[in-house]
Image (tube, rainbow, N blue to C red; front, side, top):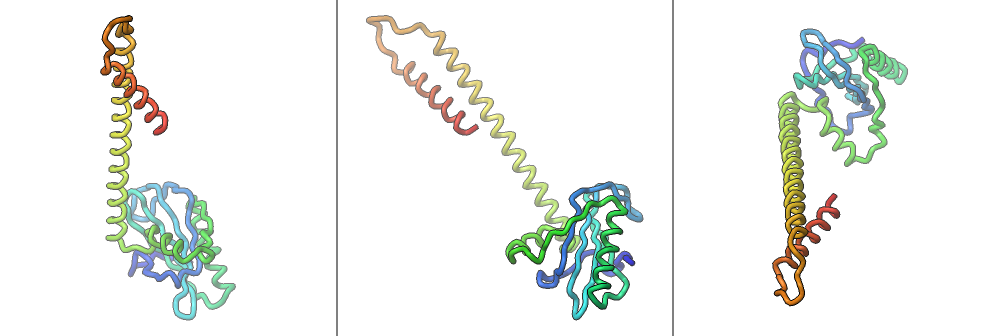
Length: 202
């Protein structure tokens, strides 16, 4: 059976120790003991520890940004008992509404494995999780601000082009014998160039 770990809240594991890794592809509302209901992610991890294996379930509460770690308490002695532990982990998460799938960790390239481990809160200290979440929030805000700024710039450019186009169109054509106006020619040229750039950028 699985019980909450009282002495740790994450798994301090090396890449070589990870034998199997599964995660949920949904975030159901879960209310663990002494926590309010909130969208939650689930991870199941099988680790090589010494000559045996350990199986963990990690629930990540996305609002409180904390993790709850469960450990399989029965002794895993062989392949059959390992399969039993993993099946119980799948049943445990399924009962809570998680849709869990195998990430096929063992078949990934080493570089991909490292990136994956670095992105999962299961393998991070609570402090590292908070730092990563805050960094992601800041990066997201910066990206959003950049998109807004770009949108505003494009809108201003479009309005300017429309105003210039109207202004040029309202001017009277050059009559025979009148002086050629280079400013008018350049204005038309700039308008066409700006319009072409905007088309390419879209």
